[in-house]
Picture: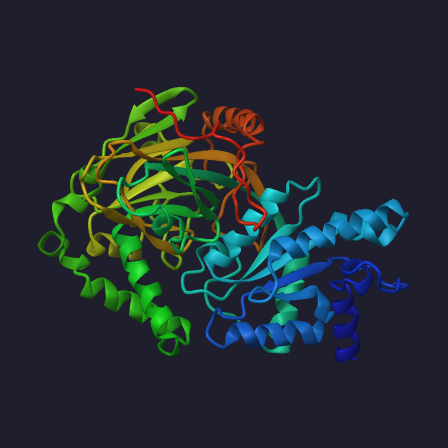
Length: 480
């Protein structure tokens, strides 16, 4: 009885071959899928778990609706799928209409993998984009945790996978802000620009060389950070790449993170790291809370890490912003931290001890401000490189020591649909169960929708291999 029931439930998620590949024989489907899914799995994530999960999903569903991201690029898979759906719809295929309307994506991997798929879906700009659920296979799994999918690596047995599928079917749709990032710097006078263009950048960030400028652009959904945390993450990823056999499970990875932080001296940072790497000495930061009005962001001189945070989860489920009271919000001219309000929270940390405050009840970092746009201008010749991180993917970013106009600008760029497994930590501004209400929020939401519409043509996230540089209209032009 249990196996029959399980078989019927699995049909709710089934996508037939003729939908996936034009030219296949049309199949008569007696049980239209209630929750059709396409599954993308990073088989290299989670030690052996990614590969095991790939085998399990292919055994339970149509193997052709389950893709290994090491073999199939998601943008090509989805472009082909939606092309097929369009062709079938033109022929009057009602199942194609049903699947396009109800399709959901399951993405198994870490934060970088989840952001990769979010970028692909955002770039496609579909009239009915699929909602996305995430399986936590990484080390931090911050995006997964924010939306109720957990932060621990999942089981790969049949029962665990079927339970996850049932949760996807009953999940709540929730929008999440998308953030566009653009960096501009002059090309070095000596040497080839290829050294920068060939950086191992995150999936969502791409490098270009145009008219004597290096341009880096892309997008993120959870966080962008500069400084201490990114340097630790970069060392961890570098070590894991060199010795993958030493990073087989989540607990081992987390211990390695702590060991690297100690080794780099972040618990005694004033003794081990020069003041030139403090954020205030590295760059000037301005924010835009209301359209057209830039303000200086005051950063304490001791800050060694700055995080632009969209979701309430960072470094494995910690919340740097916390949950300030109504009085604190009002006194600081802040609004509650919603994931779809068009505002990004900016938090600073002094050292690793400061980060451990997040483990305490009501612990949080130094709340620096909220903004709909953030502008970093790096000081001339401060240092020749820094460390940055986007949604779990770190890199070592060269900085020009000759040009005083190295700039990064972050701006709101629409929203994408997620699936939330309730209860979850992420809160929507439209959710009546949210614990805070604040009058200013509607201003930001309405203004950001207008801003996103005006820039919809030029703001692509570049996660897909089809990414192209449109023109220079969105190159940072900052005026005092």
